[in-house]
Image (spheres, rainbow, N blue to C red):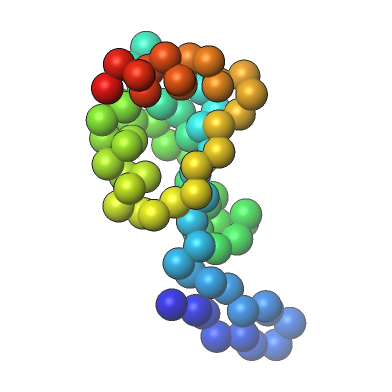
Length: 79
């Protein structure tokens, strides 16, 4: 799905989605979820199970911040 271009607004691919894991606290994943444009970003927190299900359902590209890489890897290996 793509949004229509109008005026000075570029065409947006509304199917493009990204997740950037920013932090891990206990079994919770803190992350930024973006749809189509960096201006369309929301910060969320979910237990790992829900996070993994959300990521798969959204078909999002996953990025993990350097500071969160080790704790995220440890958490993911537990599930």
